Structure formats: C-alpha cells, structure tokens
Length: 235
Image (tube, rainbow, N blue to C red; front, side, top):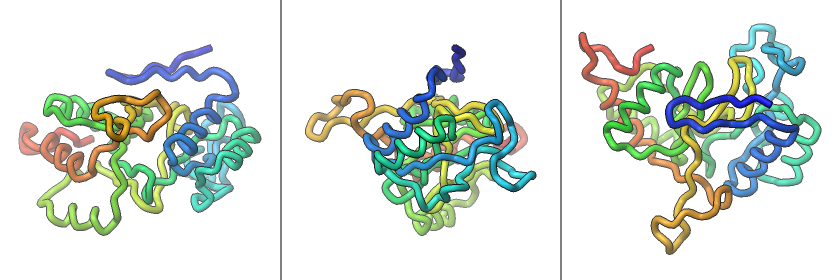
C-alpha cells in the first residue's frame, strides 16, 4: 500500500482498494451534487498513454471520451454502474452550472500563488493539484460574468486558465498521464444553515467555495511587483 503525499498543507491520499474512486465519485455526486463521469483512462493499468484514439492526446487519460461530457450526472445508480465496471477510471467533474468552476495555473506558479495568498489572508476553497497544474475551485460563474470581469482589468497573468460552463476538471484520487491527482487543500464543508461557523460532518454538505472575482483579484495582486517588472506567477 503506497501513499501519495500532498505538498505544503496538502492532504495525503491513500490509494487503497478498488473502491476509492467509487467512494470519491459518490461523495461528489450524491453529497455535494457535483455532476461527474469517468475519464477515458489508459490502455492498461500503470500506462501513461491515453485510452482514446488520438496518439498525440495532450491530456492522456484525463478527459471524457465515452461517455462524453454531456453525460455527467449526480445519479447514484449511474455513478455506481460506471465505477463498478471501470473502478480505476479517473474522476471527472463537469464544471459550471451548479457545480464549482475553477481557475488553474501551472504547478510551480500555483505553489507560489498559494504562499502569496496565504500571506495576504485570502480564504481559499479546495485546491486540486497534479504534477503539472494546480486548480483553485471557485463558486459557479457565467461566461458572461467572466468576460466582463476580465475586460475590466488592465492585465491578468497569462498563466491563468478558466474552467467554467462546458468545461471539466479531474478530481482526486485519479491517476492521469501526468501522474496522480490530489487535494492540495482539502474540501472544507460550509456551515449548517442557521448555525454560523458550525461545520457539518465531513461529506454531508458541499465544500465552501470563494467567489471567482475575489480569487482573480488576489492572483493579480500577488503576481505583480516581481523584480524587473515581471510576474511572480510566470512559468
């Protein structure tokens, strides 16, 4: 049995047993109401290629294929059927709608960003990490709002990517062509209605998510002022 350690303040994710993916998928779908579906995965266990027909796939194993993204669901029976038949399939969340969206950065820039945002006192939600890219989960936003927000800014780091309506994100405890996926910052539950500050039992309520505007504002602030006028979040 092997553990994959998280980075600074990250969670350790024990990859044990055939049911880890199913349990994670059920938590997302039924407890948090995040629509999920299995990723394409690899051609064989431990392989780093992609199970899709494209030999030059840019995100091997880490994207929807069959079923496609439109099949993402919160239905418990469908989720159980998928991961019972494909227990090692990556866990894919369809972003947007009522599900979280995300802002992602290259891994090195993401690690720097978390340090800077902690120093600024910014409250973050869950952070999904891979060896190549880190994603900060945020509350759902529309593409129209995102466009207006970005248009109003003089500059944003070019390393940022936005995962909104029609997008997807690979969630832990998946394994993709670039390596493992883990929670760098674990999902923290929202307070119970009527009980400010009281955390419900783990897994019983959707994780708290920050507003995308607050996260982008903080990332822009954290990225400025590097020596020579560059960006601290460059890569």
